[in-house]
Length: 183
Length: 302
Image 1: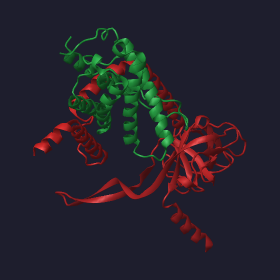
Image 2: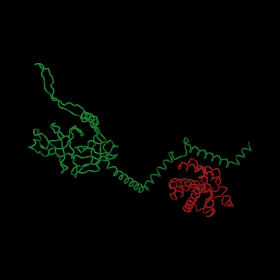
Image 3: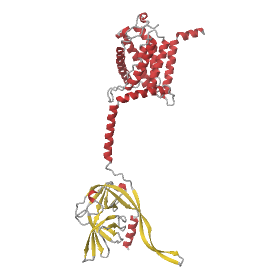
Image 4: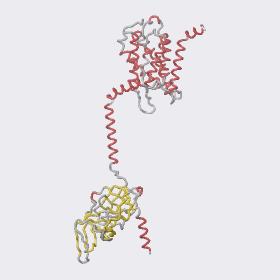
């Protein structure tokens, strides 16, 4: 399968999973005051996480913007997702270069569990997802009045998102079993 | 210029990033105010189509939940219905009963032989009595007391009921309001030692009907002069002399007792109102009754 087609399919699939399933499942902790507020896990940033390493930064930025804007259209959030995604795409290279010391070895592949191993991949996705979630919730809540609430939302949303990222990785690990090259 | 281009080229990614972020924030700020044009919103047709498809699918998963909620809704509505079904839904009506008299007059008619006077009988409406009917529900009823039987209605002074108003049903008389509270009225029913001004079908008035303790089905119209012809099955009506509206059916004559000693007949009248199963009644307010009473009271003073 062509790497372009693969990424296009992944884009569509992730957006559909996000807007048709996860957005419909606002997770309520317990419905008491002081309980965990309702929140949504985000899985669509995985598209940016799984883009091949050799993707040019401008393409990552633009695709992040398009991805975020698509989810924004479904969630009526204006451009919050887009802003978070663009920020995430911009910082992806720095996180990757910090995590992968010898970058040349990985030049032609996509960051995933098989190519990176569990711990680096989860660290990588956790950092970028934390960035995405923090940006998203700060813009959405737009106040530091109740910082504990903000942090609570970020942390629980991040934890659930990570669960979904792991599930997705396990589910599609056969398809990303082979290290493919983009040329 | 070349340096500038090089600068742009060098920081191309950063510039693109900042530009995209600016676009994002302008989108956010536009979507946050009311007039903002939402290009990126679920109002556009593609997103709407997808959401509709998703809803079509999810609809099936929710059928059970939907059923349950409909059931709950049904139960709630049934409860509400049972709560209101005991309340009468009669509307208040104003009856305009024409009071008529038969007049014997003659009409002059020109003939070939000259002017001829032809006697005619025509019915003439002399006045309209304005009666206001207030529907009420019987919430307590007694028929078994020996002297006085009372009925309690679910309407009171807040509904416009006053003391001494007449109470009737669609097919007969019931009684007279004796006491009124805010939301209830008690009625002395006809089954009491209270007389009802009566007239017969042929117009004989100045009679009275009274209840004899015992059966709640019969009352007695007393002291009908012997020369008045009364048959079994004749109707007996109220007069407008008293508080009842005129021409309300009291009942039909069931038995005629002739008392030779006093030269009168007593008519046993079967009440047209079934007091045993009284449910809905009308309280009648005579809008000209007060005026009439005042006038009559003025006569009594002299």
